Amino acid sequence: MDDMALLREYIERDSEEAFGLLVTRHVNKVYSVALRHTGNPDQAGEITQAVFVILAKKSRQLGKRVILSGWLCQAARLTAVTFIRGEIRRARREKEAYMQTTANENESDAWMQIASLLDAALAGLNESDRHAVVLRFFDGKSMGEVGAALGANEDAARKRVGRALEKLRKFFAKRGVSLSTAVIAGAISAHSVQAAPAALATSVTAAAIAKGGAAGSSTLTLIKGALKIMAWTKAKTAVAAGAAILLAAGTATITVKEIQEHKTYSWQDLPAYGNLLDEVPPQVRIVPSKHSQFGVCERNGKIMWLGAPVKNIVAAAYGVAPARVVVPNGPASGKYDCIANLPDGNQEALQKEVRRKLGLVGRIEERETDALLLKVSDPADLQSHAYDGDSGNFDESGGFQFGCDPLSSVAAGLEMIFEKPIEDQTGMSGNYHLQFLAGEKEWSAIESRIESVRETLLDELDQDGLELAPTNMVIKMLAVEKVNQAK
Image (cartoon, helix red, strand yellow):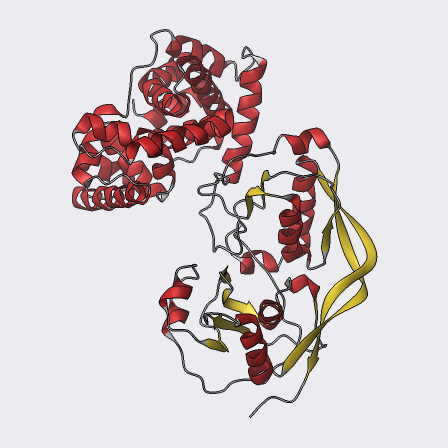
């Protein structure tokens, strides 16, 4: 029986035998993922047990077309991240330093170089590519079998595996590990799956069938945390906006002069990323947008916004958050792309362009304004998100992501959804690993249901030990006025 047939047998008949067969079939693979993260057999065993408990709990929710091998590998990785996030990051830094001194590309040495990076590299692939790699190199399937599992022919499967290996090669190369795709494929095939302890399958099956009822408190805590992260990671990473925030929003509320004839530029066809600001010729422009999605990058004083409402363009020109911009009344007026990548003086140059093209100027003034205060509602819940790493590990998650940020950055990010100034009054120092609205990929998808999204966000803040309290206070705002446009 194939995996899904066994899973149906377990779901429909509560068959312990069927579930036990699934565990026996996949326990080595799950254990190996966990062991690569922890380097500790006992911890890897506990993680393996947690993964199969999660499978038992979520078995009825899995779609008919799910590839169980790939799903289990992803679940194992997320559970391991939950278990030992801080330790694995420090271990990776140490191993990466060693890898940079290693040049021998034989299979054994290659595995030593990529072992600690492999699961993160796989997480960076899209779902189909990840399933193809797992089926081909973890499960040892033929190309024909890989294609059949993915609903494609053998030739298509071969091309997909080849593309996935090239993506892995580039991932490793960026981290100082230069290997050919053939060496990577051989290393993964030979070393990625290691035998789990003989008794582990039996204990895992018993714990999973009981859905964690017989598991220890630490395992139950691990399961809860892993389920939360798995719920966060259902969608691909969306357009990057700011240091760690993947979604941004703004609503244009003024009328500007329509530009009937305009030239398009090469930079408008490219995604917003930091290096682009150094690669295109220095210029300052505001032109009607070619983008349906919102994107922004600001680096070393250089600015680029794509698909942005007028309010956001003005905010970028004056270096303030869009929620702190007060604009004249008027109907919405489309979206714009802007770039300012001069060697210096970009904000001043963009301000002049805003006046010339849009007929707007701004000045900072103190105003009594409706605002929100970010406060701590439960210190214990918030403390569970304290983080001392270099950056957060969200991988495929969408929504608002704060990987290693102070709560003042969280407050600034939340302004984009609530469209009001938010002041950090938590009094908490240090950095935090937080994520909200997971699964959201485009602002346009949530704009039509903004009120329900805000309610969801308030609930998620409460779960993480935070709250937003409404207030009215004097805040520095950017007041925008219309002026005559330059000829």
